[in-house]
Image 1 (cartoon, rainbow, N blue to C red):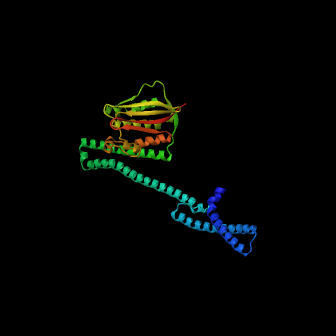
Image 2: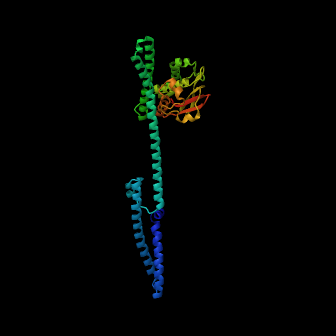
Image 3: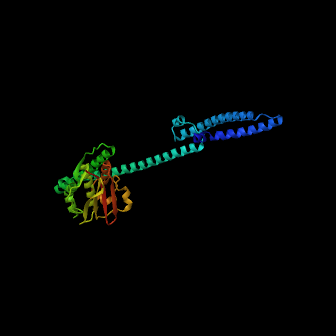
Length: 347
């Protein structure tokens, strides 16, 4: 109660006390020369003056501050006007200032967030446009060339049709991956957790990517022999996609006659961590914070030569976030990279 009194009525109380002391002192001196007055009448007079002054001052100051501060709030839209009418009106300027500062900071953060989103939106639209435009123009170029007469040449026709087919295939990858990310973000893609052996699943991904790795003479292997199954609980199909995307990147940017190595270790009581390590070209530290953004490429020209949608790592991040798991990356340019992610261990 005392703190509330100080916050709301301190100004009025001090002002009323000053008026009361002054008027009582003047009245005492005046009555002293007129013949005197009993002390209790002075006390009653003081109480009456104090009470009257306090009520008048408090009422007027509240109205003054309320009207002007409310106008500032309404003009700056820092607070809803209903906020001022619901709570008690205060004459404490410090409290009002803190209120304004707090809401001003919140608005500043909100504006900054909107600015960042707008920049991201512009960049994203530009990237989507560029990624779609490249294969579209490629396909269009080959088809127009064939229509202009190149179709008469069987060898040229087959060559151009094959290249056009690759362009259409890349378009399909981009659209499919964009659809996947959208579903993950809005929660439309339902995960179906099950218990499975992560060792066996990794072997299946090795088999699936064997031909791709052989083209660059890259060895896919475990860091050691795993004789006992490592059981985890997750959506098996999605985790297979995570492993495949990370290994494809490892092969894509790996060194000729290099190695992509997978290790699986116990992290804490109910977690395992899967590490995918290569001795490829590595990634400069400046790129690491943006590595999982849509369409972000470290080496734009090299990435496009290798193909792909440019959404692989973004999909990996979203799948693991949907599982409430984490992904980590460590890399050094010219030495290699290590991507690792956690999974829930099955009981």
